[in-house]
Structure formats: structure tokens, C-alpha cells
Image 1 (cartoon, rainbow, N blue to C red):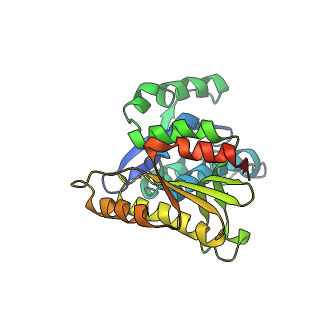
Image 2: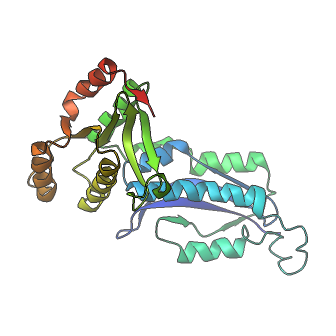
Length: 273
């Protein structure tokens, strides 16, 4: 059997094809190892929209599920004998994905190697291609994302962080939605960060999630959290920033004043939901 490895990457810019490596697959068509980096998965969450991140997370889990529970075909002895018994995790199919699947996630073209599929071989390859943190460090988080990530631990006793809702939760939800902060005291408390130096498409997606949930939780206290974007570089986002500060349907909080939310949560004994 042919042993091969393939690197799974997340596409963060479909126009330029820019991507970041997330995981590694090692297989011979019979036995497979797969793993991915949690730190890299966390990193791409700052670079893509929430739906894409959710899809990638589910895709990664599905690969594990295929290897562990589905792609076990002991009766297959002849049709794919040259490539192994597995119907899905085999070199020809991964080669096909490397050519035709280039949208949100992509496999690299399989590389054949003359080794057995062993755990220590997988670990060595993973360390070489995925665990090299110097690659990750070249893609710095924006200041906004750094502030957001640093704030979450301060309020995790009061809010569920990045709470997700499906349409089954409430008929007002047309699509799945998530909110950065979700808690409850005498009423629900919502908090949403909006990075206005993202592409306007991503800003619209984040705001749509927030707007959907405000329609579900009408009698809630809402925090909308952002900061002023560069007016020359981001004119549409700057206009949007001006408008959301005027609205009374929520409490606007600048990222320099996050203690306002922390103080409210403590004073009102907000609990995670």
C-alpha cells in the first residue's frame, strides 16, 4: 500500500488563495492518523467570518468521525486493493480533493513516503509541518482581536462566551447565529464585538447575527462593543460606527471602556446561560 500525507489548510482569502495550515493526515488507505492545531484554529477565527469558522470546525470533526467510525470497510478486498480498503481516506480521493476543493478548506496534493503508518511517524510530521509556531506568529492578531480575547477571561463567570443558537431554538432565527457574550440576571444580557476594520462583508455577517438575536431577546440589555475605524481606509465602516453610537436600542461600549460591562455584570449578578 502507498503511504501518503496531506496537509489540510483553511482558505482565508479566496481571491488571493491565501491559506493557513491547520492539520495533517497520514494514511495508507487502511490505517490513518489525523490531527489539527487548536492554536491555529483559534487564530483563523480572527481572520474569517463566524460561519466559515463554524464550518471548518465541523469539517475537522467530520474527518475524525470518518476515520474512527465510518471509513472501516473490512469486506473491501479487491476493488481498491491497490489503494487500501478505505473508501474515503485513500490517496486517489485526497488527490481529487486537493484539486477540486479550494473554497473554505483544502487538502494539499498527497505526498508519497516510504514509511509505515505509525503514531511516532505522524507526530514527527505534525511537528514539522503544523506545530511550528513561528509560522503562526507571522500572522498577528489585530489590536481589536487582542483586546477581545484578553477580555473574555474577565467575564467568563458571568457570560457564556461565543454562544451559538440554531433556528430550532426560536422561529425568529432564519439562520444559525452566535453572540460573543450571553448571560442572564432578571433579564437576558447580550454583548457583541464588532471589528470595524474587517472587510465590510464580515461586518455585515457579524451584525446580522447580532440583529437576529436582538429580535429574539427583545427585553434584554444589549452591549454593542467596537472602536473607531480609520475613516480614510474604511469609510463605510466609519459611517456604520457613527450610526450605531447614536442608537438607543443598545448600550454602545468602546473597547477602551470594557470595565463598564464587567462592572454591570458584577453589580447585576449576571450568570452564564
